[in-house]
Image 1 (cartoon, rainbow, N blue to C red):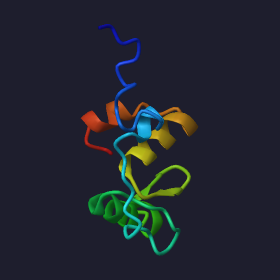
Image 2 (cartoon, rainbow, N blue to C red):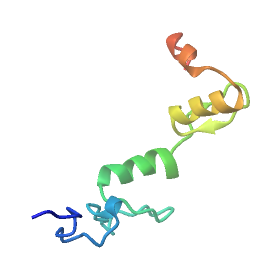
Image 3 (cartoon, helix red, strand yellow):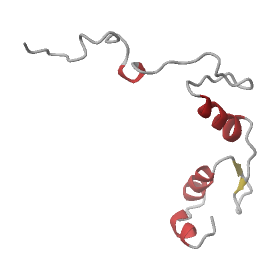
Image 4 (cartoon, rainbow, N blue to C red):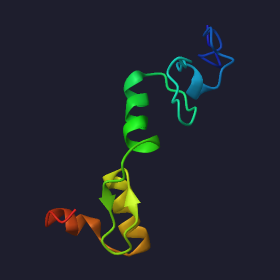
Length: 93
């Protein structure tokens, strides 16, 4: 027997594909902004780096601050046209 849609018999076939396996635990919610997370470690990363995180990464050109190194690198590349790959090789970032 040929099935046109292999998910047709799946119990969650009515759910959108990206939400099929996602279960949100309402107890894992940021007290500051209200974002919910399905895993505790993701909530802790959010609290430490996004919502309540200290902005330790500072642009040496415009003094803009960032919570994550990758955000500073993207800022340098997009706003100041600086090649961050060369800076990494020299251990300057």
